[in-house]
Image 1 (tube, rainbow, N blue to C red):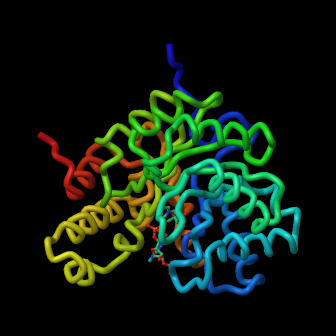
Image 2: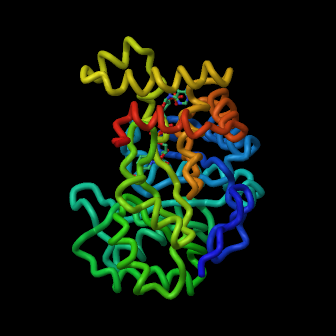
Length: 310
Ligand SMILES: NC(=O)c1ccc[n+]([C@@H]2O[C@H](COP(=O)([O-])OP(=O)(O)OC[C@H]3O[C@@H](n4cnc5c(N)ncnc54)[C@H](OP(=O)(O)O)[C@@H]3O)[C@@H](O)[C@H]2O)c1
């Protein structure tokens, strides 16, 4: 019989002694900064309690970055300048996207990616090593063996998946000799698919922790109503924003807090990965932790986002 896992804030990263925070800090847009600016931003996130730091080998190519791994390199420089910072975080990164190929989770590629990430991050262990996207040409047994080898060698502490279906996750898990710790789907009031496609159900039944990417729809949920109508002429985005604003007004809080608490309300207790690179907004995001939406409020927002409620 399954037992209910500990409440959020008390959960550990599976197989480790690392306590998971309620909110994570994402590095997708962590580019174009000098080391001292990057250091300040990272400290703001850590001080605010966003102690899971979510990066990827491929981050740095988007948002004006110049080269593959640039993002990990920047974080590595920050960590080198103050080695004490490393112990304050759960360091998560991802492998498996190689521009031009595009997906490669073969043994040689994953081992090399791990070594490269360790070198760029200037650390000797990755706390959470995630498959960025499924490589359907790699047999899950081979990927499981590679991950297990890396874990036994002490290069990674835990592993997770991102953009995996529930079935793909189960296939990988069946060949693994340790439990996958995390699932990382896109999840927000604008992207409700994990509620229906089995991913959040799998998190419940396997005690995997969901990490929700783009919890503000990549910034779309922060637009004005006018901008929303222009960005999405179908009216759906504006409908979601109006529902969030209505609830924010009822609760005397901000739209962003409501949008994040919407994500956190699912019983699998997803951890939103906060993507802003603005210190004040990182701190503002923390307000979401103390908000609890009523059922009626949650379903109203979900319905605006397109959830069918027969
Ligand atoms: N696994 C995957 O395939 C995958 C894909 C995408 C992302 N991710 C992960 O998810 C993380 C978050 O994604 P995301 O950056 O798209 O997250 P998001 O929180 O949905 O969007 C962040 C964007 O919204 C903007 N924004 C505007 N107003 C804001 C406000 N009031 N508060 C907060 N943000 C505001 C931010 O701009 P400012 O910076 O100017 O505030 C930023 O550009 C990434 O860093 C990455 O770790 C994973």
